[in-house]
Length: 519
Image (cartoon, rainbow, N blue to C red; front, side):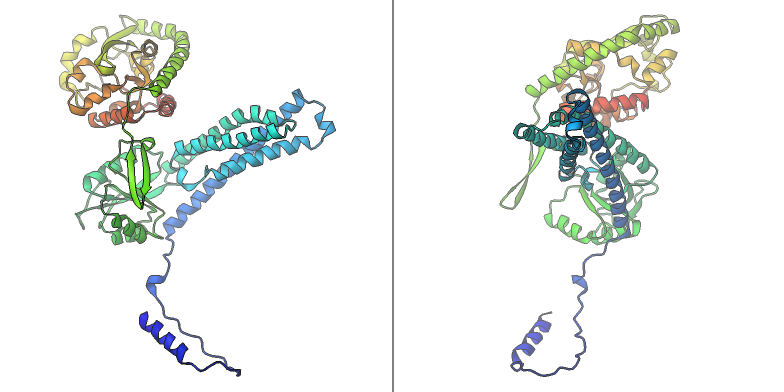
C-alpha cells in the first residue's frame, strides 16, 4: 500500500501545471483491491434473527398503541359522563384532543425508554421495569402540564388511565412473552448458540440453558478449550468444534448460530476484542457467562477510571430497612392467604379424615433463621405412623445429600398425594409466616438432622428465614440435586429483594398449576 501511495504522489508532484485542453475519454482507473478492508457480510442466521426480532417488536408496538389509545379514550369518556356531561357540546374536539395528547406522550416515552429494544427480549424483568418507568415519566410530564395548564379532562387521564393502562400494558407484555416462549419450545424465535469454554464450564452453562426456556437460547454447538478436535457429547444434537476464534466464527456460519456464549472468565482483554472482531457479521451477540454466577445484577456495577474498567460488587447485608420491607410483605400476604385458606380448610380437613385415621394437621421440628428451631404446620399427607416407618425406607432413599425423598413413598395417602402434587399441604405454613418464624419466600426449611450434616458455606442458608416457596420450588423442587438446591438457596440468600420475592410468588402460582418435581 505504501508503494502505491508513493507512486501516486510522485506522479502528482511531477505533472505540468494545468492548462485548457480537450481531453479524450480516459480508461477507468483500476483501483487496488484490499480484501481485508471489505466489511463483514451478514450471515443468514443473523438475518433470520433480525427478521423475527423486527416482527416481534412490531407486534409489541401495535399492542402498546391499542392499549394506550383504549385506556386514554376510556378515561376521557369517563370524564365526560361523570364530571363534564355538557363539555362535548361546548367543545366537540375534547374527546380526541386530550386522549391523543396523552397517548402520544405515553407511546413516545415507551419508545425512548427502549421497552422494545432487542436486548430486553431475553430479559423480562428489565422489560417490565422499563415499561413501568416509561409510564411514570409520561404521566409525570402530564401531571406537570396539568399544574401549568389545567386542561379539562387531563386530571382523569392521570388518575384513571395511569393505573389501568400500566396493568394492561404489563399484562399484554406478559401474554406476548408467553406466546414467545411457546414459539421457542416449538423451535421458532430462538437464539441458536455456541458455548465456548472449559469442558466443566460448558457443561454447566448448557444444563442451565436447557432448564430455563425463558432465555430462548438453543445450544447447537460447543467449543471446548484445550481439546481441539475432540468430541464432547454435551447434548446428542450438539456439535463439537475447534476452540479458536477463527473456528468459532466459521462454525457459527456453518451451524446457523447467532450467539456465542463464553462459559469461562478470560483474563486477557485482547481475547474478547479479537473474538468480537471475528464474529462480526457471523453473530449478533457475544455473551459472557462470568464465574460471578451467584451474584445478581443489582449488586454488580461497572465503573471506568481513566480507561480502567472496574467491576464493583456490593457485599450482602442481612439487616436493615430492606428486611423490614420483606417482613411487611410477609404480613400482608399471610393475612390475605389465611383468609382464603380458612374457606377451603374444612373441605381439606374432611377429605383427610375420610381418607385415613389421624390428625388433620402435621407438625414437625424445623430449623429457622440463625439456627432457631420451630414447629412447622402442614396438612397431613402421610399415615399416622409415617415417622416410625422412616427407618425401614432409608435404604430406598432417592434424594441427594442429607435429603430423604422417595417418589413412590408408601406412607403417602391418596388425598396426601393430591395435596403434595399441587403444594396444597403447604398452605397452613402461612401461620408460621404470620408468627415471624418463616417468610413467604426463602430457602427450604431444613430438618435438624439435615442441618447436622451441613458443612462449610451451606450454613449460610440459615442467615435468613426459611420460606414457603423459593427458587428451589420454582426451579424443579425434588428433581434438583443437593448441589443445585444449595446453589439456588445461597443465590437467594445473598441477592434477594422485594421485587425478587414478588416474581417468585407469581411463578409459584404457575408451578402449582403445572407442578414439576412435587412428590
